[in-house]
Structure formats: structure tokens, C-alpha cells
Image 1 (cartoon, rainbow, N blue to C red):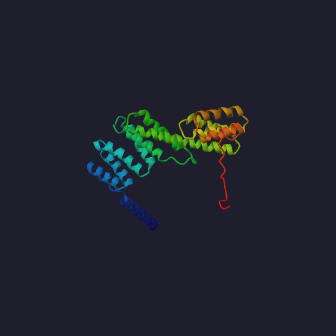
Image 2: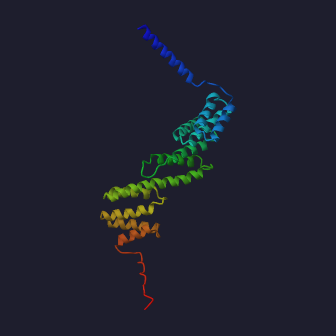
Image 3: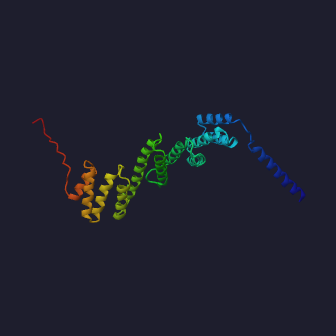
Length: 263
């Protein structure tokens, strides 16, 4: 029993020694050296190490002039390394602690980009797209005269087009399944909520299709009329016109004349 206990104690001591040896020895360094090391790692593409080093600047020298910049640079390092969740957490902390800092507009912009670059294709859940849209709108609302507002506005248009595309995909699926009421709801959402997107002409055409399928002739005609008024040269309008009127609108292609030149 004594021998066994001695072995157990010895093993525990060895484990503690090994763990202590593996622990990173804390070493306080001058703030300039820490910051420059982090910056060099960032420039070399060592984003994870860079983020940790910038965080160490803030931890060791929280009241220095370098600490505030290091907080933002840590978030940027995470962003560069595609560690978007960590970047967003760091940016939220920066905004909360320094609400009046001159770099706050950039912090909001970088946060929006961290969401925007995670937008998936329209076949997947669009929660990230919604978060990106909210963050981009916040930039335009809070900082309308900033240099980030124009790019945010452009990305808002692209994001809305993406969301409209998702609604169209679901609408087409419902329509193909014969679920015309569900399809109509999706197409109307595109027309009402995403009026500036490229999907509106098709949405109006699909609405016309679905109304006709449900026997709602007058509603189909009204929708086709709206399509023709707003997009008179659209192929979708021509298709809708032909459906509603029940006759071809496009001119038929002329048949080629063939002759035998060696009579």
C-alpha cells in the first residue's frame, strides 16, 4: 500500500512539474517593442500571432496611448485571418469602450465587412446576410459623411439583391410545386421590399403567371400592366403580355430562302 501511494505521489509531482515547464513564462516588455512585433507579424501574414501580440499590448500597457490602437489592430488581424467572430467581438469591445474615438467609423465598417464576407449563396440560410445589411445601414445612418458611407451604400444594394434572389428561389420552388399562394407571397415581397433590385421584373412576371394559374385574370392583367409600365423593354414583359393576351407578340423569324444555283 505504501509503495503504491509513493508511486502515485511521484507521478503527480512529475505531472505538475511537466505542466509548469509547459506554461508560458510571463515577461513584461516595453510597449513599443510589443507593438512593433505585432505589426511585423501582421505584415508577414502571421495574423493569429499578430492578434495575440496586439492583445498583449493592451493587457500589459492598458493606459498607454498604444493600447487603444492595439485593440483596433487586434480586430483587424482577426479579420485578415478570416476569424470573423473574434474580429466582431473585438470591434464591439472597441466601440463600447471608445464611443467617441475618431476610428469608431472604421470599427463599424470593419464589423460590417466581417458580416458581409460571410454571406453565403442563396441556397443557404441568409441570417448572415441580414446581419450584414443591418451593420451596413448603421454606417450610412451614423456616419453619412464618412469615407465608408459610399461603399456601405453600394454593398447595401448588393446585399438586398442577394436577399431578393433568395425570395425568388423560394417563390419559384413553390410555383413549380403548384403552391401558387405561397409563390405569390414571395414574389410580392420582392416587389414591395426590394424595389431597386434586378429581380423585380421577373417577380412581376411570375406574379402574373401565378395569378393566371389561380384563375385571377384581372389581377394578372393589372400586374402585367405594372410590368409593362415600369419595364417596357423587358423580355419578362413580353412573356407576360403573350400569356395574358393569349397570342404571340414577338415577330416570327423569317425563313431562309434556299435555292439551287446550278440549274
